[in-house]
Image (cartoon, rainbow, N blue to C red; front, side):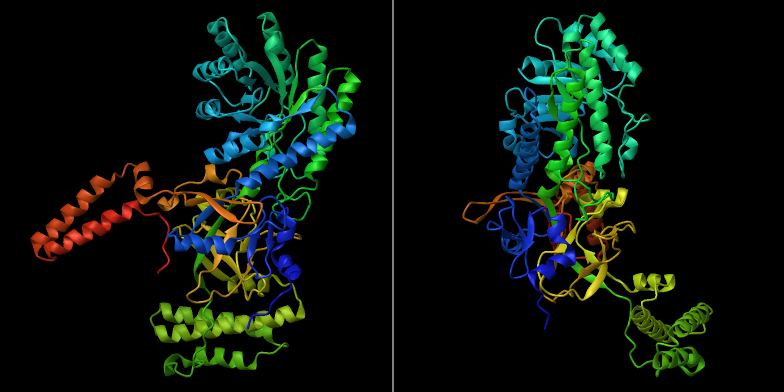
Length: 640
């Protein structure tokens, strides 16, 4: 009978109350709950939703999106800046958020954000020609910014000019000196009519911190040096286009964990804005870029997976510093905008998937070696004797001796002198000795490296039905941490510690680092799966970058998406289920077409019919079965 934990203690096992930002909790039944509006009275039980979807024929993995979390995140950001402006008397200035499409280009995500931020004129940022094409077709509030960043060609600039003539407030940001002449020529070619405004991205001395620190500083990929900035202003003045210069833009990197780095950038960027304004450049917008971090591990520290500040503190520092600099320089307050895409989207998405199997070291000791053959019973009997005689005084010595005996058994086996049965007995006895030695070491609290490595070797591996490369690519590429938690049985004490392995044929397809408020954990507490019942895990906070960075390793595609809301009465509603990639779709990416593949299989089966190895009628069923798989999803299906 599982021990039932108090909810408070259950929360502490996975630190849900710390990294969940009020969006996640545990029900009295031990289910993971989602509170899209942060109202604890309006929470949905995730296991119930998953069970309903399974009854409707939808298999895990399932990517859940909660549009109301997007609304809540936008409102929190705007509320924080408006409160800061009221507190510090930032009169005449304003704040509007900007969403950078590169963070998540999913249409449903972008449209939900634009709808949520419409009262504050949320803008959209595009970093490529395709992103700009999508952005110009989206419904934005009148006067909202459409910002174009990244490298540009003449077609992209012409597209931005078309946006201005559609009535959109388009700002083309100059990233490199060569873009100045390119843009001025595009303006000249455009002739009469509305033209976009222009932003100047500055290369900051201030640098970010964490995994993305290389994207900032004096050696950054983007941005104008001070000299290039002045030359750009001179070129626009000379061309009679100074009136087009409207924005100063800077960016010191993503996921900045330390508020001091941000404050330094705020001050430097504000000073550049003010100095240019005093030079007669008619700037009106200060774009502070991204960098606002997410507290993935709940530690509230300056670690890479956290932040040592709140959104309110971020907004207060930004507004106060800009006001202070503008007062010193006696220039008007700007419209402040931030491109905090991670903060707006990270919480709204999670992957729920099923555990397929559990791999554990072979601790079966059977008859403790009594059945070993006479020729090689010595090694097995030595191991059996160690197992019987091990104590708190000799466990280290016996563990070392057992390691030697195991190695000797392998040597004998490689020379053909040992049967598979004897080798199996030796391995089983060794792992039991190792397990007992580790128990003694833990009892004495001796932090010996050899026993730390042994503990990792004895940890279990849970095989989980997903692809790290498709759904959690930043864990593989950057070792970014994401909270992972079972969606049920949370009030039961987890019996095991485990790492997670995905279903790709790649040793990198695993998750072996987990969030913790004190350090990075190498194992995750998990329950013993109950035969015949699904044991599902949720990988949380996946809304930023993971959708767009995922790849098709082993041809595992995107899973089904489920968009879920909850009404004011607490009723759960499935807004839509977006089908994931089918086998046919992922194969076609690499030019394997369904009809051609089926035809090839039919030819090979026909040859076998002609050879008399298979009945002709049987081939029809085989071909039908083969063709039927093209319309299925790419992940493994649990037996029904």
